[in-house]
Amino acid sequence: MRTSTSTALALAFAIAMQVAGAADNPAQHPSLAVALEAARQGNGVLVELDKIVPFDKSNVTREYREQRFETLLNLIRAEGGVCADDGGTHAPNPAKVRGNPLLNEAAYLHARYLASNRDLSHEQTLTDSPLFTGANMSDRAKKAGYTGFVNGENVASGNGNDVAGQSIMQWFDSPSGHCSGMFSRDFDEFGFGAENYVNDEAHGNNEFKSVFMTGKR
Image (cartoon, rainbow, N blue to C red; front, side, top):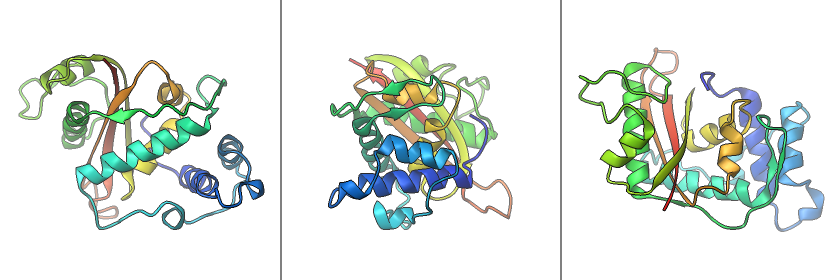
C-alpha cells in the first residue's frame, strides 16, 4: 500500500479506540466494526487518540512500537470487523497473537531497507546493499533465526509519530488483502518493525516505512 495515512484513517482509528476504551459504558457506543465503518463513510466524530489510548510521543524505541502494535492488533482482532478487501465479516477472536522477537527483527530490518531506499516492496533487490537481509520474507525471517512458517507480510508508508496506529489503520482500510491478513487465524505470532527517515523538510523525520510479518510454529 503506497499511500500515506490520511486524515480519514487517523479519524477512523481514533473512533475505534474510543469504542474499545469505553468499557465503563458500552451501551453508549456501537461495536468497533460499526464505528470503523462509520468513520470509513465519513460519519465519525473526531476523537483525540492519545486521550483514549495513551501514546507516549517521547518514546520512539523499537520495543515501545512493537508493544503498542501488539496491543492494537489484538484489540481489533478481539472485536472483529468488516474488511474492505474481502467484504467479509471477521468474527471476534479472543485468542491473542504475540510478537516474536525474531520476526520483529526481520520486520524492522526490512523496514530499514525500505526507508533507506525510499521503496515500498515485499522484495529486496539491492543485493550489494549493506542493508540487504534477503530477497523475500521467508529468507529474511530465516536470516533472523526464525524457524517457523512465515505466511504473510504487509508493508506501509506514511508520516507521523504513532507508526503502529497509523500502520494498522492503513492495513484495515486497504482493498488489497492487508486487512483480512490481520484477522487471519492462520498465524499465532508476528513481527512488526518501522523506521523513520527524512524525506523533505516539510515533514522532517516523521516519514516512515513499516512492516508486519506473520508466522506459525
